Length: 399
Picture 1 (cartoon, rainbow, N blue to C red):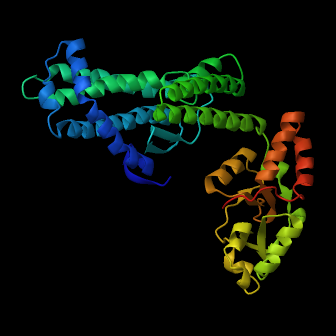
Picture 2 (tube, rainbow, N blue to C red):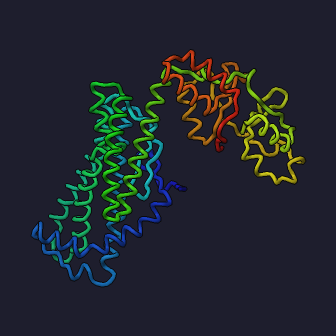
Picture 3 (cartoon, rainbow, N blue to C red):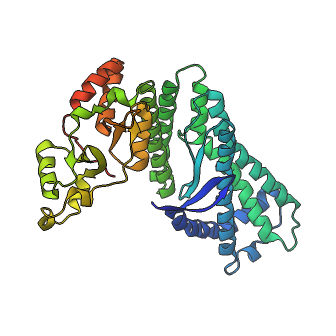
């Protein structure tokens, strides 16, 4: 869903996802509904004398719930800042910290592959949460009982929740903090990709168990977390496997060379473009004008034109002019990340002289990945990828 920036900390943009705005009032209501039970528990376990009647009267519990919910998400931001600060010490760029309905996530440009660095980055968040829990509990003990029951409730709640947050994140459910700690420890004596696969399998098993518990207890929140963990583990495994396979592979090794690239001219009609797409089974073409690349046109561009107007419209009127490109000397994995980040399915490739050298698509990358994994040969991937790149794209990649 859409997110927007609400501020920054240490130069890191703090973003809020729309799902966060939807869940915040729900969380405030849930906390408010449990104020009486939580206060009773505090009084019984710690021997405190919080006034249950005063804290549960009228709208007081829901005001406390709102304050506690905001405080909890503030603690989540500090948790993610813990990861971020340690990562920055190792030279890793932090793109943003985003709050969403399951908590928060720090967007690291990449996770360090040195096991000691990853361990330090992964453990930093839970350490911050434990520290916040201890500080909140200390403040809870120091605040006077008389007249400050509401303050003591919020501090006690945040103390308990921060400790719980640290404990939950340390469960071995990759890609949570505990899963990353597990991968770091596994990577001490085995390849990084293999450590990732093992940690991911543990994480997926944990996700299945958590999902089953959620189903038995009709707990949608646990089911959502289980789904997130399972999919996150699968995604991390795929990314790490691709990174390992494409190590040392450059764009020029697997791209479709310029002489084999199918293209269209800017004055081609949309009707003619669609006819070519049907005949050639391609869903995207680079657009040239006097041997100069001027854009990219895709099937989605053509579909935006009404059928009765397709003979009148030209490619130059519907194409994307702001084209993402890559260089022949770029790493294949960098090209993949560029496509994913920009939401495109193909990138024009230019050589060191600024000349159009070819095109690289997701199809090229996936074909090369399959060949490299099967044969371990970059040369075979280069040869076969160029052959298969002349075949039609099986999918239309969104812009």
